[in-house]
Length: 181
Image 1 (cartoon, helix red, strand yellow):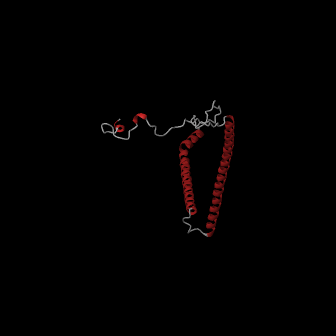
Image 2 (cartoon, rainbow, N blue to C red):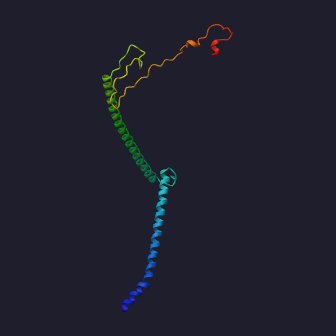
Image 3 (cartoon, rainbow, N blue to C red):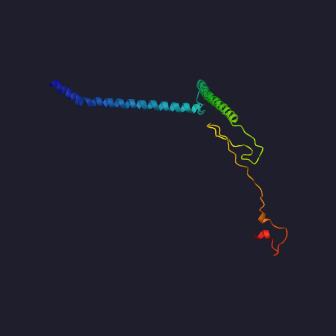
């Protein structure tokens, strides 16, 4: 029974002492981690300022050479990435050009075939519909080529009306008859 009581006392009364020491150890490690992170943050800030060309005065020649090598390698990587991007764009544009050329050839071939099936027929009588072009007899079923239907010739100009023709001289009542109608 005595052993049980001792264990009970250790668990109830001995634990807070160990809990306090573990809590203090945890706080201490957290504080040390904070200080390490703060120092790392300041070093990164200083490095960023150096890369931007600021605060270079306190650097020695080895640090400056290291900074120069770092900038050169970064510049090479940036140029390489940019060149690769431009080559990818060029390849894509060449592929699109090839597709457009193929589509253009196909359309030209269909256009030539359309003219062979339904050629333009010139009519000597210019007053016919479509400026001398006879309308097609049947529309084509092709989805790309539809011949345009022309409108009849538009007659623009003055058409004299025989009723409203004005005589050259005054009438019986000395009024111009063309003006009073």
